[in-house]
Image (cartoon, rainbow, N blue to C red; front, side):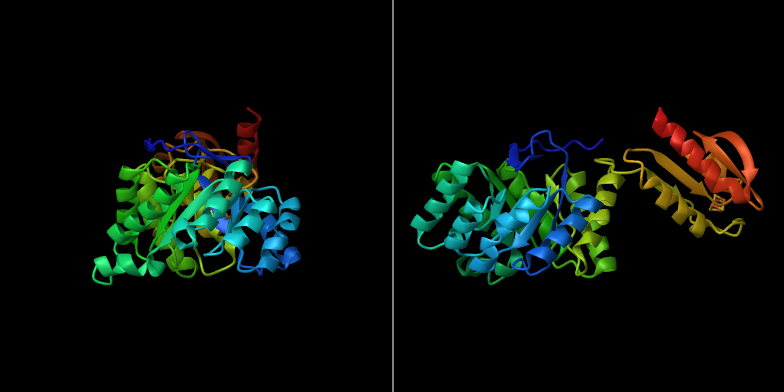
Length: 354
Ligand code: SF4
């Protein structure tokens, strides 16, 4: 079992983050925030697939002024992503968002960030500091020969954190994203030794679905395995709803959280006598409705299948014309190949009636 680093507990709307809370799944819309209908529709799609916190870009006052309209129509916490502008942050707070993402060191003059902090304190909403390697401050870059190093990223985060702490504000989250795994992991590791604020982890600009999934799984997975990370975001150049199943699969692979049963399947070989890919996809579709941890195995031959699937709660093993339904390595019954899925479904339903 992974031992998670215990961070400060904060609330984003009604969703707890840090402390003893589970790792939360987050995403960001890619609609024009000013288009309320499209943004709400995308957020609802994200909610359906398991997104627990959503962030929207707030590039101008028009976008800031529709935030309460968006919030009214969704049921997960809404985070406003703001760059540089205290006025946009103040408007987002007035509109009732649940968290803002802004880097206090980028807001000038300092009096303006004081106003933002005061407004956040009054409404009890946290601030996320989001350091990105690509937009590191010039003075920090100069200290590292122009390179956006992990150390520089941590230094930038500490600078922003210090501003908030000096204003007596501690409901802070931090992210330190780079587009490569090494810097991302190094930066988070270093920062997690220095502060105990909750960390939002992810690899930025990870790419399209295939590469982005691999990059995020390695980057986020490495950090989570080391006990680091309180919320995660898989960044994909794609429809953001594609990010959520990947995030849940990472959590499930590390046995941190389960939104549905885990389906393992054999890689197939020369002994496979059924269409295992089709069968596995059908099993995967069936288990989606069952919202808890359970290990399902789908195996391609009745010779090795039962033994190889002995750790599974339920195993579906296909052979030529016949198949087996097993539980923890014990054969429950032999069935005709065409009845395999129906018999598996019966077994699954029994499990969830327990
Ligand atoms: S379970 Fe059977 S079909 Fe699947 S990989 Fe093992 S030996 Fe091959």
